[in-house]
Each structure stands twice: as C-alpha cells, then as structure tokens.
Length: 337
Image (cartoon, rainbow, N blue to C red; front, side, top):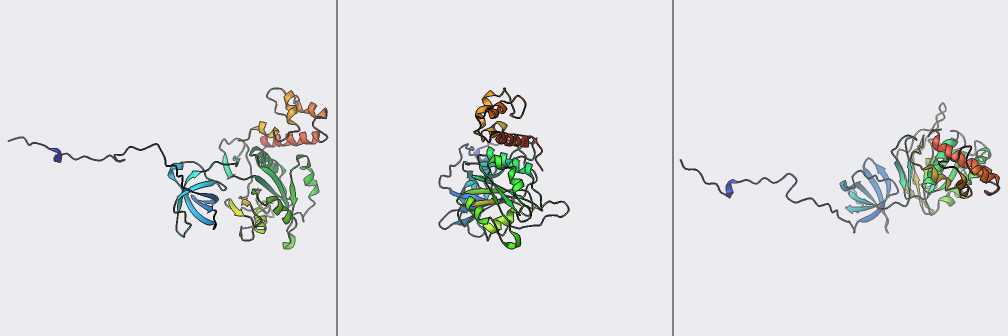
C-alpha cells in the first residue's frame, strides 16, 4: 500500500475570528461631521438640533467608539451618517466638542461620583417658591455654590409672590448680591415675567429647583409651545410631584436658550473644592493671606475676622463674611432641606 502524497489542495486555511486585517489604533477624524446641539436625552437616544437655515431636528445614538463618555443636554456634538432629520433616520454621535462649562452634582456629600447635569450654559437660574411649598434655603445655598464652582452667573427667581411677602426671604440673600426676580401667576396673570425674559435673553440658562416650585409653569410661559407637564403640591407633605422626567433645552422667542431640568430633592457637592468658593468674594480673598495653614475660613483662628474688623473689606464686610461662611457650611451640611 503506497503512501498518499499531500499537496496544497488538501490543506484548509481557517480564517481567524477577527479577520486577517490587524486592528488600527487610529480612529477617523470625522472632519466633515455635522455639528449639532443636544436638546434632549431619552433612553440612549439623543435629540439634537442642527442649526440652518433651516434648522432641523436630528435623532442620534452614541457611537461605540465613545465608550462610557457621557453626553448631556447642551453638549455640542459631531454627527455622521444620516443627519437629514427625515422620519426614521438615525445619525451617530462620534465626538463631543470641548465644553465651555459643565454643571455637576453628586448624590450626596460622600458620593465620589459626579453627575453632569448640563453643559455649555452660562447662567444658573435657581427657582424657588415663596410658599406652597416652603422655600428651602440650604438647597438654594448649595445651588449657588455649584454655580460659583462652575463659573456660572446665578439668578434667583422667586415664584408665588401672591401668597406671601418676599421681603423677609430676600433679606437673607442681600449680602450675597445675587440678582433676583419676584414673580407670581395668580389667576393666570403673570407678574415679573418680562423681567425674567430680560435676564434670559441671548443667554443659555439652566433652571434648577425642587419639585412644585413652578419651573415648568414658568417655562411654558416663556416658551408658549413648550408643553411642559405641570403638577400640584401635596397638601399633606408640602412637596411637589416630579412632572419633568428629563432635561430639555428650548429656544426662547427673545433669543437664547432655557434648559428645564427635573425637580431635585438634594444637591450633593462632594466634587466642589472649598478653596474655590472664596474666589467669588474678591473683597474678602486678600484677607486669607493672614489665615493659618489649612484654615477652613470658619474657625476662631481665621484671619478674615481681623481683615473685616480693620475695615479693609468695606462697609458690608461683616455681612459678606457671614454669607461666605454660610456657603462654606452648606458644603458640609446635608444635601437636602
């Protein structure tokens, strides 16, 4: 019996599972991608606006190459694929453009995980009712700390002024020199709405506040076709019900953007560096040069007391120092009421 001779036809070459071409670490630059603004996020789908003319709404998904990189309302993103905005079309987000600003919070002051809320805004509007539900000063203080940390201009909008006198509440914020607008919408007649429009015109603003304060009602008045759901306050608990479930960016008729966010019940500040807060008090910051090393600016040895007593911080120095320390304590207090 003779031995059979084998040739190349008897050998089967099985290709590798990942193909024969080596994977490249280089990723396409997508230089011709379409730039759009993220206006809404819903279960892995991103509503974006491509500015025209004409403007068009494009639904998109995140490309796998972005990995775990988060995308939030306000982000400027690069789209590839079908960016026509036609019904049934779906583009891919392949790049998040550098952010000019980012508003963040944590679940509480012990949580190391930061959660981005919105990006590329320049004004934080803290909305608070004067009654029904009662204002929560510590939560407002925390929102102000977050605004200062993100280099955003703060604006305090007080609603339901028809139910109580706003003066006692505003007295607590006078030393902080936070701009404010007092509004009411009793019997469907708005007071103060034009002043709010003036503050928002031409800017990108995010509205933050706890449930039931009237954020969505305010947005519907500012953007008549917004259609944001509104709800009532529970008579027993004094708390509002979450009516907005996700952030959404809306164009204002007067120019600019307003971003409505879901109601919050806590605002963690674990990500905030306490030393940054003092930078927003330029009349007090020079006095920290006489503070002992590691000074928290809220202790008996703090050099700011002598600085204020000497008059170098100006006539409002004592009130400003009290406000600074109130914000510093807000960072260490509970993130809720």
